[in-house]
Amino acid sequence: MDGAEVLDVLGEQIPAFLARAASPDGRYDVGCLYIGTNDVRRVEWDAAAFERDFRQALAFVAERCERTLTLTVPLDLGRPRAGAKVEDLNLAVERVAAEAGTLVVDLRGFRGRNLLMADHVHPTAFGQIAIAERALSALAADGLEPRVLPRELNSYETTWWRRLRGDLTYAYRHLKVSARSALLLGRVRLMERLLRQ
Image 1: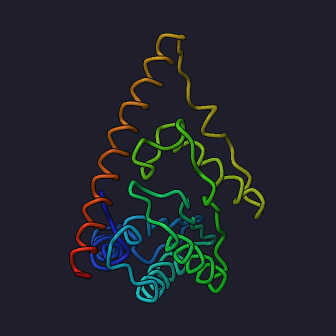
Image 2: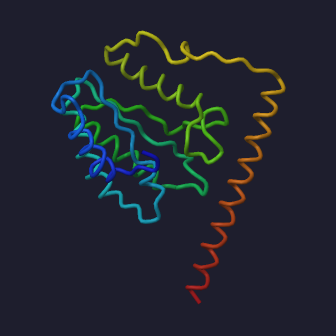
Image 3: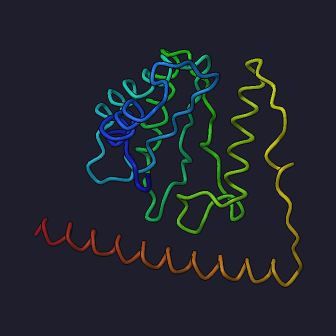
């Protein structure tokens, strides 16, 4: 679900699973919950409400799985940047995960042109592979060895021209996103100034 927040997990995704799964009470080897990116980007971010709802969603997954896994969020999130509240989200995720005995994949430092799109929110195809491999490393450290690594399933060819074209496309998109971000921040600062007068 694009743009999903933790309340969507509780209000839509979990009920859909319960209604449609062949065995809603069945057991699974691994369950993963990665949520919070869209929550923390909202202006009306509420850290306590997120932690409460995340705890409920993770408990649902953990009840059905031998191992559970969750992920923190990259600190350099979004344009305009989500800011310091991202670390509040990450600390909440780690607290709840520790309570539930859930493995945590730390994505705080996850960044880079090949890993994230110009919006600094959505992972590229290579970013998805990198996240999957970090998740598999966490599972391997917990005794569940992967049979194959995602990068071994991927094959592609590139040329200097394709790399250059990709770099130019990324630079253009990044400039566009950054300009839009600067415009939004300028509007917000202007409104704040007007409200103070």
